[in-house]
Amino acid sequence: MDKKFRIGALISGGGTNLQAIIDSCEAGKIKGKLAFVGSDNPDAKGLERARRHKIPTFVVDYTSIIKRFKKKPDKALLPDDYNFDDLLSRQTLLLKNTDSKKTETFIMTRAIAEKELLDKMKPYPFDLLILAGFMRNLTPYFIDRVNTDPDHPRIMNIHPALLPAFSGTDGYGDTFQYGCKVGGCTVHFIDYGEDTGPIIGQKAFQIENNDTLDTIKKKGLALEWELYPECINLFAKNRLKTVKVSYILQNGEERERRIVKILGS
Figure 1 (cartoon, rainbow, N blue to C red):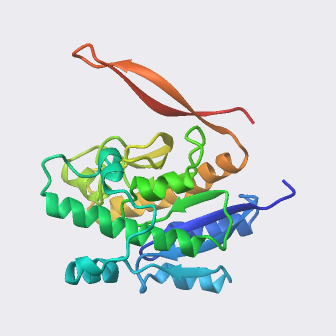
Figure 2: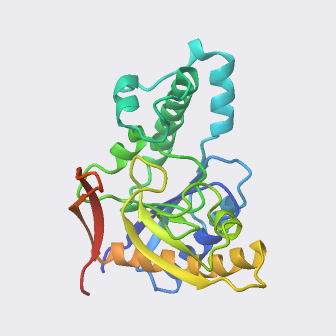
């Protein structure tokens, strides 16, 4: 590749996966570079990692945005292209019976924060956006402004469990508490749901009788640091293709979803 593949990253915490990706780029395992690192958390230690490698950083403080909104919702500055009914109809993060006030607050504050995210990202063109421990769910407002071509998603996430099992924020904890004999991690594209997007790759490890939650996390993280760069490299080489497949539910209803095919080198 003549042109460096450009990777944008969003983080919330320590940024160990971010470091694995930076190291892979610098070692030439990924023929690319980090274009920026953004965070919802001003105290995220991963921002310091990025700065040490002279990668541009920025913060969109979700907590402050939510607090300001709850204090003075009538003063909220919503994006010009904000459409509550449209976002409500397309999001799948909140259940239909969720309290209407909670739903309104979630969608409005996310739109405000995501517009700011998009504005902060604008000076830094990127080919792929990775979520490396970004602890905020993205809504259709953000997703559709990054994924401008539905057939070519370009927001990637890593999850600490073998999806579709144990979606949510505590994949290793759920794996351990359930008594599973196998754990693992998953890299997938983002869609409108919580950890429901098309799966790109997975790695698994055995859980032994003497394993603890800490040892399970340690095993999982070691695999995450291998898997995420591998999947990013596949994307950079144009070896990932999403296709629609149909399947039949037990009640006979036909459904459709997207899966990822890995093309030959």
